[in-house]
Image (cartoon, rainbow, N blue to C red; front, side):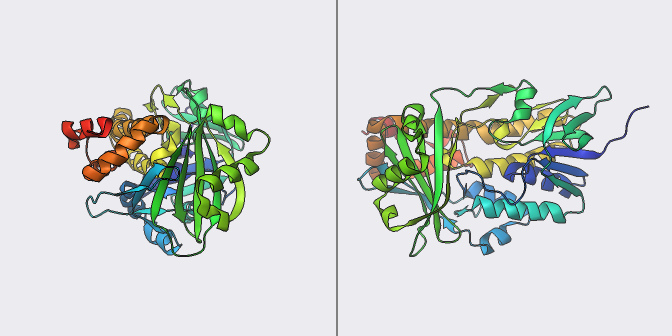
Length: 389
């Protein structure tokens, strides 16, 4: 006699993508169990920028007001440029009433999500419970093998992050693809008014990415390739401080708060994002690079697409199609930014072109947010961007 099921949906990983997948699924009437091997609240290296395209999903979850009232400052756009040279400002494009992102503090955001999971009557939240494997059963159900026992569900969302262990056990992992990129992240306490801009400063084989978060802090990340990562061997914090303060002199008057953390390599792909009742959501579903800061927003939007797909007679293709739409062009925009990061001449041309055609880079941000496609940029604008003419 076949065993019954313990839940309609099991979710592995309670970060932003996994928590949102559980909340969206429960809102659609599904019984949900969600696991995470960590205790909450917990901190984790993260870009901490919620781009404007992610705010509708946050609003649908009923969390936007809590995030804003918790001190998350608005993000108005991106400033970028070379070291010791003026930066150009690229405002976020307005779209369906959205024109600003939010600087979320990951520690606070994870706590807010965990609180929402714990309060929802349709969700059983099990932190400090590791999911060790997934088994497909002969009756079409799926069993998640956890440290606390086996759980059977109709659908499983795997949202256990960049280096997803379960994705690897399923044989779906592709990568990481070289050249390998890494991030070193810390927070700085900044006195004075909030600077509402995300700032990207390009250096040799390295970028400083920074943005405001709650509590008068700025998240400052060094994004670099493997050859420069060797500089941090045995002296992660000291070398991070040296580089950050050399490239961003304003940090010399700021206090670093909390630990310095390293993460990477980044580029991971997948053979599929959905098959026979198992779905990949968030970074586990493939991740290019944090340079465009789209990770949190993309994870929330994928979570909503996953929950919507469960109502389809064929949920796997019903998820694969929107997942591709949500990620294809943003990944291309990230690849373009990465090319800029490795080619100083292209950075100079983009800055020069911005003075003549300021709308081009704003359009490019809109493509990264999923607002429109690459056809929004005219052939003439492409020529100007790469040739400077």
